[in-house]
Length: 131
Image (cartoon, rainbow, N blue to C red; front, side):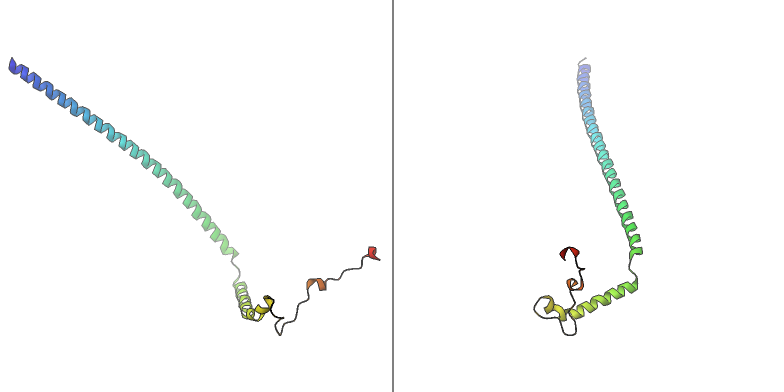
């Protein structure tokens, strides 16, 4: 009978070990599943944020493309660009002649006439009330 009692004690201890291991494994499984759920939630949020970001970037690209297409029609004619380039080249060429005058240190350069001011060109009709 003592062998049955010893075997019963041994089986009870083994049963407790198995229950302890089971409890530990259940705890690990719950932790793993919780971490997995958290990770999945985070990945879902990251995917949603990436989707929104990509949609915004796509909208920005489409808007930029539309602006560029509109600009193609607004580009000045090549003759206009050429005239503008020649105009600014002539300005740069004549600027040294005018620099001292523009700074108020000299008279109008030789070869240029003084322009009449707008005030001198305006003629006022006589006012009847002043007579």
